[in-house]
Image (tube, rainbow, N blue to C red; front, side, top):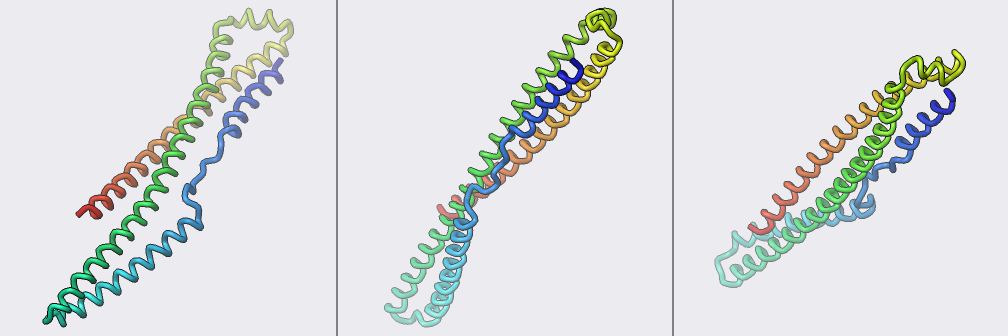
Length: 196
């Protein structure tokens, strides 16, 4: 009986810990991220080139043709800036999706741990409602009684461990939610810049 309860408790803990899926920290693949960064760098180079053209044409804007060229260069530069900001928005969108999935995974893990804890607390409650005399008489031997005492101690340790895991998971979830909020603010800033 003693070994059975310990094995049951160990199985519940292992299921709660191992059964939790690993958090994927890469919504946008490395190849996609590298491609977006490459495209962004290329666009920034083109923007810098257009700015140089603008600067050169401003010096020579004495004629109408130069004025038209100046306006065309400004339009082309603005278009490239829009494309670059859209690439940044794509990157931020991928990061936001990744944060959402991380938060969902942490919430699922916390829910499972809370369910495991409730099962452990029910078992402890059942044992606490029994008097020492009842436990001693139900076990028929002193070693059986001592096994139940050991099981109670293991349950108490399991409760403490579960509370620690739940607390840590809540802290991680809060940190991920804060990071998500920062990403959303960053996305809104880029959208605002794009509109103005």
